[in-house]
Length: 431
Ligand SMILES: Nc1nc2c(ncn2[C@@H]2O[C@H](COP(=O)(O)OP(=O)(O)OP(=O)(O)O)[C@@H](O)[C@H]2O)c(=O)[nH]1
Ligand SMILES: [Mg+2]
Image 1 (tube, helix red, strand yellow):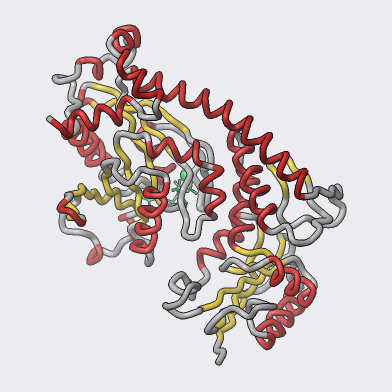
Image 2: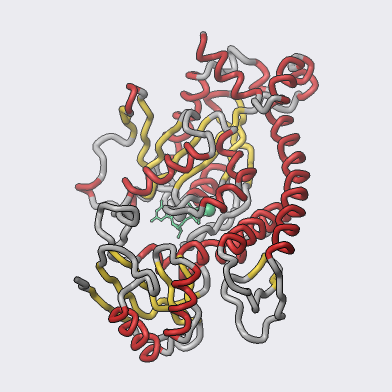
């Protein structure tokens, strides 16, 4: 009942060598629907975490094996691969239970991690800001707490949080559940403080009448590259998953509007994004929910762009950003063959409910289509009634006193969690 394929590449000398495993449970059932036969995304996740994939194994099963997740024959096959490649770790594309992890580690003789642990590890390594680090630590502790069925004897402390695959030689720290819970509480308190500051800043921006645009999209779609191309900044962009963790905001001047908007680069999304992570990163993600406009960046050259779009929409809905107007930015068109390119560089996508969403086809790398994006941002401002003619504040974002003096009723709205711009949007919808 089990079929499989195995492929391998020559082992590199230094980095942690990883065996990648994915299981196809078919399209139906609770585990179905997210099997990636190529394991390419898992490979990128592994590389982003500093590992080097040396072999890929796939299997087909009806349901996960209770003890080993894969069947025992497949587990033996993986063990042989571990030995042949002198692998340091085995990475699973799907979530495995703590018991399965324990059994597999015992059988294979190397640490085993799943997708969630890998994503958390990347986040831990990337977090730079105080807030980012707190959010990662919170997500990791919540992940640990939910799996705390055995004693964790080697939790290592690192600058970015807690390593999910603690190695020998690391400080051995024993934490019981109560200590974890206490730490979770303490971090939540500290995060609340940081978040209060953040919302004060956001309110200040809203009061200044600045139109807020957020770049959102699947990880590695090219958001940071696009951000840099639009505002001529030098934010870190790389062929890595989750290169960006902390939100960066810059002002973007739009001549056609005679005004500046604020443009934010944000953390990317990925399928099966651990729910706890979304929860911990609520404040960071809130940036997108509070935006007046989302530039949904899509890797037009990805063979799985539809699945990636669906995933992004799902996360947007989860953070309450489903109703924020969007521009669909199909990026990386330079990688498309001539016959794959759209006839028009700008068109419309009709969504359920008759909403027409503008689409633009661009390349952040070559700069092609940047003007189209600017045009569409201006059009979105117009559609929301925010043109310089209707709203003179927009053309002078450096006049906070003026804006502040006519915003007392907005303050009330903000206290019950609604931002000024959201309120503006509602008002404009009624026009
Ligand atoms: N060919 C091509 N490559 C691009 C383009 N835009 C971005 N890239 C590449 O795609 C990779 C990812 O780019 P980033 O800008 O870091 O992507 P991101 O969406 O910010 O990714 P995360 O921050 O990791 O979520 C990099 O290797 C970029 O050079 C493009 O228009 N064409
Ligand atoms: Mg980025």
